[in-house]
Image 1 (cartoon, rainbow, N blue to C red):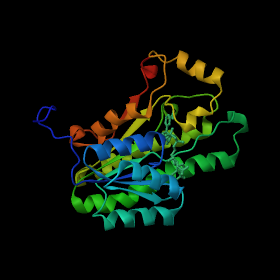
Image 2: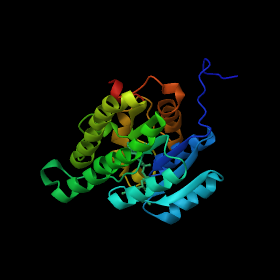
Image 3: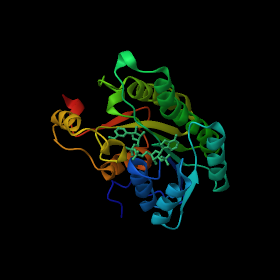
Image 4: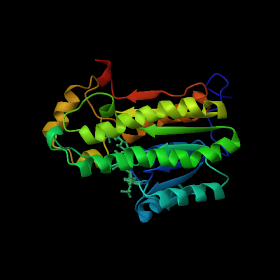
Length: 251
Ligand SMILES: NC(=O)c1ccc[n+]([C@@H]2O[C@H](COP(=O)([O-])OP(=O)(O)OC[C@H]3O[C@@H](n4cnc5c(N)ncnc54)[C@H](OP(=O)(O)O)[C@@H]3O)[C@@H](O)[C@H]2O)c1
């Protein structure tokens, strides 16, 4: 008996592709999808990390090397997905951070952020699209950031790329809804991962002082929202970006 008003949130028989699946938020979401019955392809640049993360999940999980900013890697990842019957769910969590004052942000930093966070995520969605269209259904989840929703000093390159991705979510959602493909965003606030472990203590304290819950999230706290957006629980949800930030943007 379902606890969700008759809606079955399980993902039995579905294939989920998760970029950035080797650690942090992507790995936690991949584990959550796997726990709900999905087979998962975990992708990251380093094959060994992706394979190790997949082995930890066990049967039905596979690690694949893929740099999302390299077109041939993305093509190979989705060829693998096709060999497994095609992607039903795509989660784009691959990402790197950067920070520079706006006046000194080099063009290379802007290019690097756009390459991974915008081009990488969009090209993965474009590669998933024919597979989902063939099935007549699918769900894409883009991990954006609260820093792409409001201005944060130092985040010109990173935040602009995430803001562009949040826009791409809306356009894909509108164009693909007729084919049963939903596209949503998940915008985390501060999450404790390798990406944020390098943050200066004073910067961290300042960021947390604006968070009503006064703490960072664990990667596992992104799992429930991601499951809601990607499973049948979110069957009428598309074109939205869900903010999961301990209340920061409620101010
Ligand atoms: N942590 C936060 O506070 C926070 C907040 C808001 C949004 N986010 C976003 O959430 C996502 C995950 O971040 P995280 O904190 O979990 O970071 P993380 O722990 O550093 O993990 C990043 C993941 O992305 C992979 N990756 C990086 N560049 C890649 C590329 N070009 N192609 C394929 N995979 C790549 C990494 O593996 P390899 O190094 O092996 O490639 C790793 O699996 C990112 O998009 C990030 O911008 C994070």
